[in-house]
Amino acid sequence: MEDIAPHITRQRLLVEGYYQIDVDIDVISSYSASICDALMLKAYGEPVIYSPEGLGKSDNQGFDAFLPLIDSGISLYVWSQSKFFSIVIYTCKSFDDSLAVETTKRFFDADQVATMSF
Image (cartoon, rainbow, N blue to C red; front, side):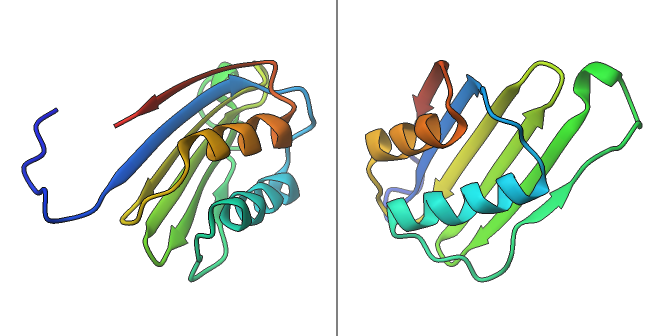
């Protein structure tokens, strides 16, 4: 992808994987704090977490969350039935991709992950 704004620092990391733990609203809040601590990111609010609770396809039930960061944000999507997550960390400051991936894998006890930095 062409960088049409090289004067603006942006780092994006997509982490997807299958998790082994039970995930609920409290777990998502804990992950938000954990990843911020690990990457030295600062949130300016609490994570906003939604669950469609029976709306839409049963295969897509789970959680959607967003954590606003001073330097951008983190989006988290969880498919409860498949025990799958998809997380996008988007910041206007640099962070250690490998630390973000390892922190996420360890937190969710993920046995299989795929990542993409862009």
